[in-house]
Length: 563
Image 1 (cartoon, one colour):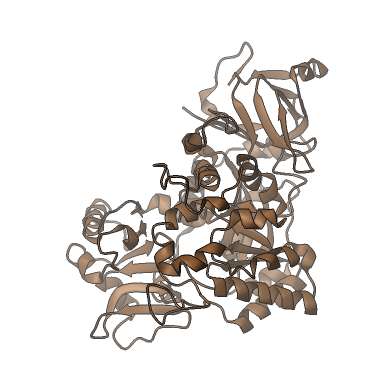
Image 2 (cartoon, helix red, strand yellow):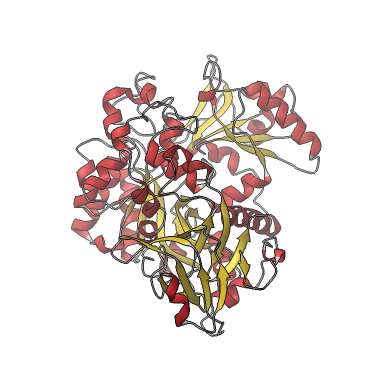
């Protein structure tokens, strides 16, 4: 956009390893700034009653919204700096309610295997990547998905060994719940025919009992624990890569699902100096050795809303694609196997007790119907023994839920935190895994909304692409980007465009106790907003995923501009 009578400043698109001081001035209440008017816009937002509103003018000052209104609003601020929005659609900044920021950053710095069509293609890609990066001690990547390959069989270490045997290779499956190692990595991890699968994990073996190179869920730790931790420089580079990418997609806030103590301290340091480029809501990892220290420090609420940590993330089960999701009955395509419980009921109960008594919300990863039931049972037990209903506990994914358990989300005030693109990614295998009957409670967004639950949406990046318009498209159409299947997959669970956008903005902010500061453009909230190239509310729904972000503004400052 151009300020009236001023040239475009291209230097505003600078987000690199060294964070600028943009957010210091943007968020600080001590530095006055001139009122700015964004005029000639097609604006949409949600008021504090969650109702959709339209406007043509936005006024903001000192990083916060002053007012929204019609074209005459500009007259109320005669000395304002006026920017012509050129008729573009304006929305509140997107909040991704479930992502993995550091994982996204490291993925952007590693080889991306999404879209690979075979194990041998990946082996060739890895060999080429390793040759180009001789300085790497470990070759790492993410994104493979055997469900998309001919035969849908897990790959083996031998396939990687054929082209890369001199250095360890470790490749995480697209859902992060399985890993593929070459023989060098298995040797360094001490994994052999005598290694026992850990609780909540599985070492896949061949007919002779030898490890094939595939490790499921908790077994992945056997390799992860021998990979050298990232250096401070690598962590900074990963965060810079991730935040730059997120801002380009219009994402101004992320609920970071599984923050380590080291990341928590680093994010807090950046926030305190005003140099955190994207707002983060930290879900502390329940498996971190320093969990006790972080809980004892109590929830942190940043006055600038750059970094807040008041949630604890805990896993019940694995993922559906790797058959690690815990089911009440065995998988339809693997007799006798009902998935994996990554955290026992006793451990989950203890974590809820410690977290709630410290004032933390608990965010429970649960994909299978058994995982969801255990999560609900333990929340119910916590209410009966120690309370904590006001903390707005969440079940992350809420993906496959027994029909009798869906109403319990409402009665227990548990938030279904869901990721719409999981449905369109999983629809090619979900029926195989679950059978038709269990699909009735799977990816059931409409059922949750109709009973009065507040549905919040995210992407689960880097498992899925972070682009929120892909999620909005999936939520509304229940189709992939090829308009498949005709009419949508389980179309009765589709939601409206208004509901989808709200789930990525105001309702997502509510799930983080931030609805009075973020998620909408009411007076006094942070001026976090985006300008996009098409009107989501009027275009054909099959065009939603094509939406492009033109500009991203955070606390009244332009932090991304499409070039």
